[in-house]
Image (tube, rainbow, N blue to C red; front, side, top):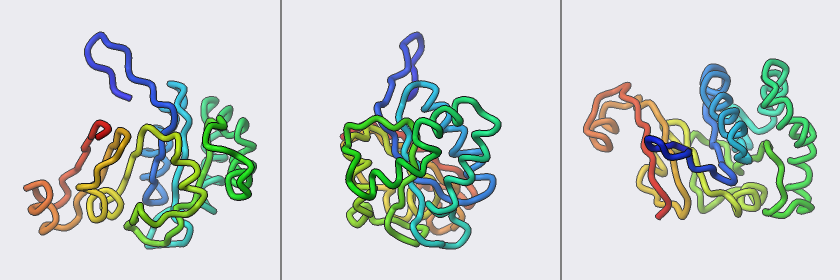
Length: 189
């Protein structure tokens, strides 16, 4: 994903983007990141809660948000159309007719929970199927990236993004202060 000096940026095959809050976080944060990954040729799986939790976007809401953004961005529009405006991609994964090697540039998948945190050992079968070819995981939000997965090791590259909204957690995890931001890239282990 990132280039070093004169080196060409590494192109990931498939990225799982675990999205967090509805509103500015998704519109100004994760969708532009998804757009950049798509522009580079990476398949993007937007992973959202199955059930509502606080102000987190759900997998049911996300296709409408992506469709609206696609009206203003050709890259998102082409990717959404290739995935049947996301609906076909979701149905194919749910009924098992898509295998992990099938190429859908952009899809939305439920994570199988309704919490700001996520235990990656207990995810939906749809997410497990979509994750098989993933070589990049991006966890966004304090719950997903700090509370439950800050020390998790992945077999693929991982990027953990969050704003720390608890002083005790800031001191314990990053020796920082409340409202500090975390951007932690970890290469595959």
